[in-house]
Image (cartoon, rainbow, N blue to C red):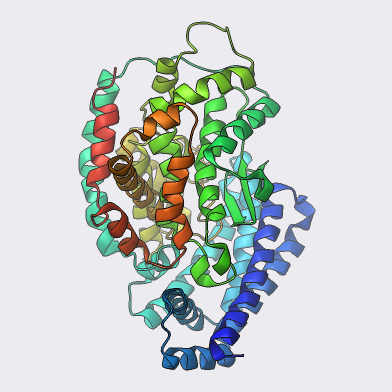
Length: 497
């Protein structure tokens, strides 16, 4: 067996362990009884320690050095080597005991968050979050020294390799300069949207979800949908799992959460099967992953063409056919594109959403740079909400600083990927329209195969063959920037009626 194949074999084993870890985490979020939390935390910590040990082992280091010297010629092998080198460099910067400590801390904190968020109990979870933050700072400092980059950039690099504050800051500044006045103008001009509240059972909403997911391209032979506290997607191309949560009287929130996660799932199911057990066969960073979810949810599914297709299914699944004149495409469009300054990021419209992300970006940088303590997060969050949205949360932790799972799960540095994903999605959709100008005729008719084939060819099937920023430029013809997104929201909302 050649050293190339030996190296692949090592990462095949790492992939299989990570595969098991993913589904243990899925089970924890979806169906594990609370009493199993401590044992599950230990199981995950052990598996992560094993993977870390394999990554930093002398054997993998020797194989890597030998393969580098061998002079690879296959582009997929070369890209696989690039990704492996990046993973190993990050892993060797961190001692195994810190990997275990952080795994235990994030498991305990996330488990407590799930329960205490419902009770609006910030005090109970704050000490656990402090431990997660302290360990994350240690990790960021070690990565900073090893990678020769700012500690916060070292965390960004985990979720999107090559991403830095130097890139984010001017892009976010463009959005923060443009959006507040734009939002104000939309709020002044938009007409009142009908309310679509009613008694929608979870069973009917789940039926609607399935009826929408299938034509878009989700393969239920290789995936499933369940419920959890916070919608998410996990898995790989042969077993892709999404979750949602159902509102008691508002089907739109759940419907769009499902469509968002379906975008993630289509990416997972479209990854190159022949490289599925190697790093190069996995998805790119979270900026690209979020672009795929927002490409589906925002670019396609909030447009008139999709709503024309979806309306009959909504009426049938929710049993509202004949319930009055409000159930027309124009009114659904007003409802799903209604702009408002709200408290909740995952419920925000696409014009205010980047402002939610910018808020979190500022705060988590301040947390990591010792400018903001965990104890002061609620006050800082409330002030930021007043400044950005004119909203005073007044002790509402549940819908304030406890609304997102990310910090409690140790995902500091993830949030910018959402907005960068939105910018990427807008740029990709512009490229699709240039190549297939009549694509919305297909969408209105419920034919999504040309959309999915375009995504498969340009994004999904490429795995990590090309780094994210290079991929965006090659597919769209331009480097990633804010202009396509600004053009998109200006066209969609600038003439609000």
